[in-house]
Image (cartoon, rainbow over all chains, first blue to last red; front, side):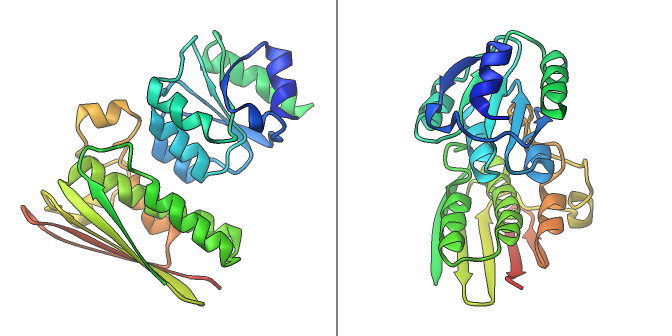
Length: 111
Length: 137
């Protein structure tokens, strides 16, 4: 599934990274620990988190992730947004919790 | 090819710069993407360690046709007990660093898992030296 399809289906907010809307999502990883994501997430995954600082962007870029999804209505901080604008990794947002949105994305990708 | 990058304690905006540059270089050299990913994981963790714990440091990388060696040298508090620091889950990171999602005690174990050779040497009150080697095949 493409990032753009997920955005439409779950009514996600797009903060930046429009250039990556065609990225293909291969799976997801839900975590707020950066080393956990660094060690265990895979290329092409959507990263579901409540971390909103610039190092999230650094990790997502190094891991070639498809998109970042901020939960609980959180917004990227200024530095994260600035870094995000130069990368083709969309930063998305939802008012849902990590649990709820992970469940929805899991079933969408699974089908 | 030799590369050198500087790191500054507490400056998280620079953490990941060396990893990103090395990743680009290795891609241009057509190194196996799986191996690049492992090197990048290890180097990023090492960069974060310097930024989170030390006062300043440098990354020295050397790339040839068969391998990459990366050295990180820092001036900092050093590591009193290296085997303990290597244990998954053990961390001395500050509350502020933990709040950012670092300091879960996975840095050194992640480095160990992702390189062929890892050597850590440290002097308390002076600094730490990390040496990592990865072969391309």
